[in-house]
Image (tube, rainbow, N blue to C red; front, side, top):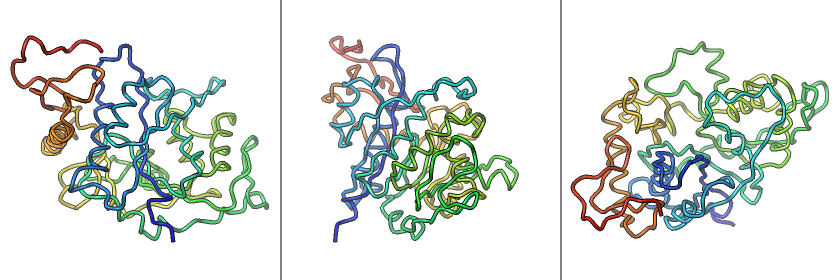
Length: 330
């Protein structure tokens, strides 16, 4: 019988568009921290040897890819997902490449993939999630329009006979947004989900790009998930127990609750919901990561001095540096 890590993987995605290679990027730092937390940190790492896949798009430099590889991740380049219509409008400019995440469903050499956004603070190992009943039960696609596998909107492609898609909602967390119950039920969060790759499912997602107003395009791939896996549709999504494996809009209450991963941009400290205690935990993890990797030897896009640490989510100088220390672009 194959071991669990032969067919499953953790995964994240990096796509930041940088004007210059040495520009500070908190998402790059966050990917590095996620690699450290899943593969190396004693309190949170996998004990099952499960790999971490970092998906990148073509514009991500080889230098940054090499950093991810050197720290233990498997880097996989995926192509862009383009659209030619005029009704898709990302809510934020930096989300322009988010449809590329859908290409994770092309990775059919894996039975199941747990996707996490990079801005995750792990509190415990995620290995237990693979044994959850909901993580192991494929669902049969419901009939639609009287024929199994067909969907209701013109232009949508045929669905797979079975599928697996499990996630969390945008309302899970100590500081839940004020969402109506009906909306919360559909509000899949695109930053934490477990699914079985499927070319049929990927084709279906992509077909929605040609169906005007079929999903909320402002939320990009998250909008596609919310339409494709709506509760009353042919492939309704299932959710993990609230606040067991992940929480967004996190507070110290989630930490005390024992939630496995806390999802927030802990480097943006001027937001009212980002609590200082959680920011401190993020910074502690970052500093621990830098010490673990002996970061002066990694050949980062900008050479990083040993006399540095993380404060408020960013790498900063902790004290005066020797004159020979370079912070110029490589």
